[in-house]
Image 1: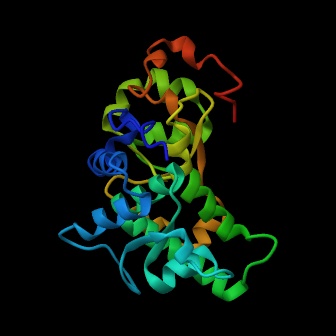
Image 2: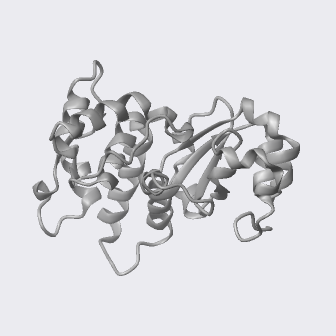
Image 3: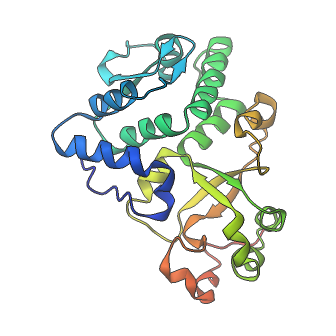
Length: 244
């Protein structure tokens, strides 16, 4: 597995820096992704708990054939983990945002229990999958939140650039983090906007998520996240910074 592509120093990796660096060191020493994550989970002073027990990470083969991934996690509190970067980053998000991941798993497992596995996930499971894979959380001054909702890129990134000093943007999607190991200008996050001081878990209700309450944000446009965006002409790219 190529964990060397993970750079803990990049700005968007800030919430994961400590755990991510430790995991990369373990994997460089020949440990599997599942073993590295499980050791990190067990070593915590306050174990992360699901209803079925403390969170653990197991090899992907531990998941029985025919049982849905989310159902297995809810039943066992164990996350099946393949030995690849995508699953390593998924585990890292579990370590750093356990209550969000737990709530997403609860909703997925409940929907599967009620509806089974069919050819289509349905609106709720679709929204959960989008957020799990490509989501981000934004706490920001109202002027930034409203500009994002309008896709008013000039206000968001140029006119109100200094307001980003008061904003917090956390990338939650593990596929998003994986894509950013090779940064490209068109990479977009699906952002869930939360109020300053608000617990984001409170936004993860079935009714709210079924409406896919996400806003597209080209993440390399965030001030301080990519050197090229110091030049306002960076945003003169309608293929990336599209009008609403």
